[in-house]
Amino acid sequence: MENSKTVLVTGANGHLGNNLVRALLERGHRVRASVRDRSDSRKSGHLPTADIELVSLDVRDGKQFEAAAAGIDTLFHVAATYKNYTANAAEVEDMVRDSIEGARSAMLAAARAGVRRVVLTSSAVTVPMVETGGRATTEEDWRTDFSSPYHRAKTLAEQEAWKLAKEHGLDLVTVLPGAILGPGFVRGTPSTDVVESIMLGAYRMGAPDANFPAVDIRDVVSGHLLAAESGATGRFLIVNDVLPSLFELARVMHSIDPSVPAAPRIFPAFATGMGPLLDWLNHKTLGTPRTAGPEFIAAIKGKAWTMSNARAKRELGWRQQFPLEQSLADTMATIRGLRSAAKAPQARALEVS
Image (cartoon, rainbow, N blue to C red; front, top):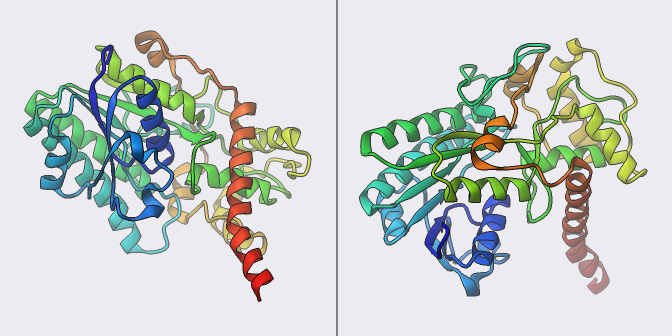
């Protein structure tokens, strides 16, 4: 995208979509941005609507997607449903369908509309975890453990995209970000929910024996721009140089703000299986978001993330620019702002009464 182009960003109201839209505008591109319902101010109120073409799009609707992709040079398919805790089977089905059918609609729409390049946001979870102390994984490795519905959804969706890219001769590149932290979100995600839970004291007794594939939103946006602008193809992991443990995450947060309880210990590995129970107890007693369903815990128990960003550095020229400390500080500040805003209407209501 060395010259001004017309681009489509799906899922523009999410953490990544919102930040990507703004970065593309700063680079002088014409941006068409999609949300499920553009008339819903909760979906679009925070977007720079005066500077973009905002369209409604159900990513499962192939005809709608084809219309949205008309006249587009580069498609950023960002939209997805992201949950590590699902309350029922219907939520699981919706998440899986959004991912797989959304990827299929994106690729077919790109083929029919003659889109020159497709950048699909996948996830680091499509790369397998390994037994603690095991080998380092790369973009050549694919997840085969589908214990977690989200892991299944993202893996099958990306595989579907690659299959259709081959069938239709599409220029596709996929970006595999880790757990995205940093500013610029207007509602919590499963990644920022981990930070919020720690802020509320979820690790006051100890941290689970697990690591966290953190990355800052600004570095993820940079990875997407480089993926679009380069001639590279294939898969690119966008994660921090070092993937911290959850224990380290809590300790860094405590160093930033001493009011955040530091985890005093790492729970023994066998205690990981109690994660869903502890998650429920913290939710009930501290008001923390739900972050760990039994399927998710089954997928990570006794395993670690070992992937690196070496290929992105080598072939895209990408570099981690934002240290974990800054990313966490900005995430925490954003969470506090959202929590204060949520309490404000209640305070006004009390004053009126």
